[in-house]
Length: 305
Image (cartoon, rainbow, N blue to C red; front, side):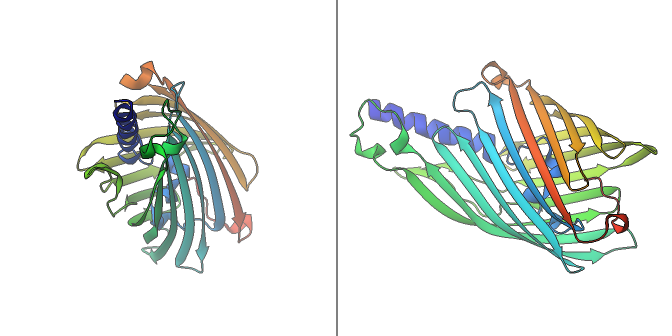
């Protein structure tokens, strides 16, 4: 009986992981600064080697709440080709998932100031259910003697249209389906394709003040549509304040600071308004970006995303 209870707990965790991570993946409040994680066409769109690290603590206060760590890097290679690398590690209780991808993009010059990049990503998902790490009353149960570990290949694709002051992106970062746990022939946590649409614009309000609205729409055939709407205010091209709303989920406040021309840091606080607020009322997210410029700063086209 106890074994079945533990199996049920593990399966529920896998299903919760699927609901909170796969159907909402990636759930980043500062998505506009972490774009190549979801869209391979973004790779090489900046005139620099750009590296980004992000940590997200979701639903803080809930026991074994989801956490996410990402690292990404991308750079142009010549005039038209971009290459990138991304690694994403998600944890929820005994369930761990790590995604590692390589990105490739090819850019077409549509006009003097507008470019269209087409991208592909390829990599693998490493899935680990930590059965052997659970605190059991019957540690000798053979079902829990080993962790369940699986590796799945995956590919993705995207398009990214952009200029100095706007962008529009479409992408499917994970195109291949996978099964996270197969218990007695019953499959749990099967991932489906997720589609992402992003857009943003920069309004020049004055010499030292800009408004930056942006939106991200996430959709899957078997999951509700998720919409993130954001408005950031940029002062003196250095200090940024913003607010976001995630449909039926949370309100967010954002702050960012361009420490040097190469380093930017940001923080986001999500106030949860969905039903899960009773156990996890808030989420926290920290991001750090470091750019190595290939051209003198004065020659670089202005970019605000």
